[in-house]
Image (cartoon, rainbow, N blue to C red; front, side, top):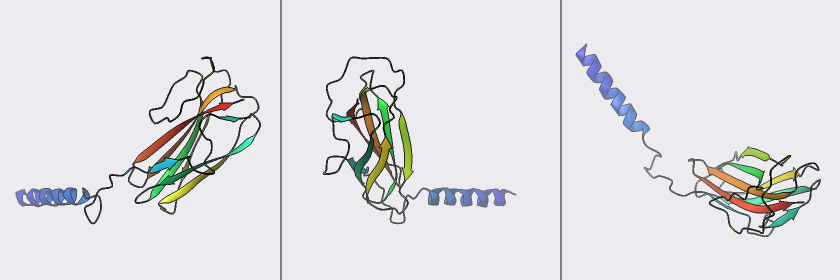
Length: 158
């Protein structure tokens, strides 16, 4: 009985140590993916004004050293003047106000082919009946190892 327990523990320890390897060559991905709207065609740019009832194509370029896995687009109100730690340029804001019917758009998408470079391209119609004012457009990208990068852009919806 002791012999079975001893060999079971050795087998368990061996399997545990083997499962800790992150890749065949022992390397560890230490690079976050990148995300940018600062290129020709990237949308929206900081302080851009969007019109209710119009359809816009939101575009950002994402890259990774190994492979991309997923991305998301989040459009939400900034009526309380909050900021995001990765936010670039800040725009002139309207007075703080209470949201009544704000736009909230949150969608997640997969990147299936494991590519290292991808252009996000999402068509979004701004509803006619939402509260106008200050909003954030937030992009997020995740690579196959779980690293994530985000960027947030101040926009205005009229």
